[in-house]
Image 1 (cartoon, helix red, strand yellow):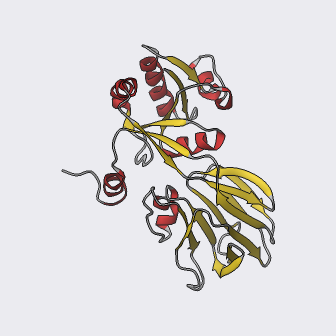
Image 2 (cartoon, one colour; image 1 turned 180 degrees about the vertical axis):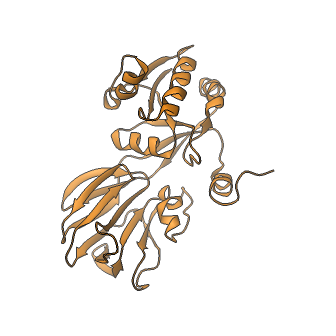
Length: 271
C-alpha cells in the first residue's frame, strides 16, 4: 500500500512521532512525506496535492486532520498524540495493528459532509468542522442577518455566528451551546456567539439548504474556517454556505461515535 504522512513540523513531539510512523510504514509499504515535515526529518518530501496514495496518515490531533482536509481529498488515518484527538483513530502505539487491519481489509471508510463556503461570491476552502464569523474587535457587538433558502430566519446582535457540520457540532459550536449531531445526520448547525438578545437559538437545517449570513452595520469581522484559514471581512460582507461536493473520509476500525463523545468530551475514560 501507499501512504502519505503529515504532521506539524513546528512541534518537536509531532516530528519525533512522525519519524516513528515513517519507520514503521517503510517496513512493508511505500511512503511519501509532506515536504515541510520531510525537511525537518532530513528526507525527500512531496506536497500534499501532488501525492498519489491510498491513505494519508496524520500525526498529531484534530488540527492536523483539518488542515490536511482543506488541502486535498484523502482517506485519513489519524494517529493521536494530542490531549483529545476526537477525529483521530489510533494512538502511536497502535499504528502497527492498524496497518495489519488495513492489509486485511478489516476497516471501513466513514464519510462525513463538508461545508462549501463563499465570501462575497468568491470561493473559500471547504470546512470539515465549521465556519466562524466573529467581530474583529474585542467587546464590539456586530449585527448579522441570517437567511435560509432566501428567507430571513433571524437578525442577531452578538460576537459572531458559527455554521457547523455534524463533525463540527462537537467542537466550537458545542462550546457555544449548540447540539451534538450524530455524523449520520445530513444537516448543519447555526449557533450564535454571545448574542445580545436570544433572537437565535441553535438551529439545525438540512444539508441541502442555502445558508446566508449578511453582515450589517459598521466595523470589520473575521471569517475563520476550521481554525486553519482566516480572512478579514468588510462591514457589509455576505457569506454563503452550502453542502460541498467532496466529503471528509476517515479510516474507522469501530463504530464508536458515542463512546468517543462520552470519553473525550464528557465523562473521561471509563474504569
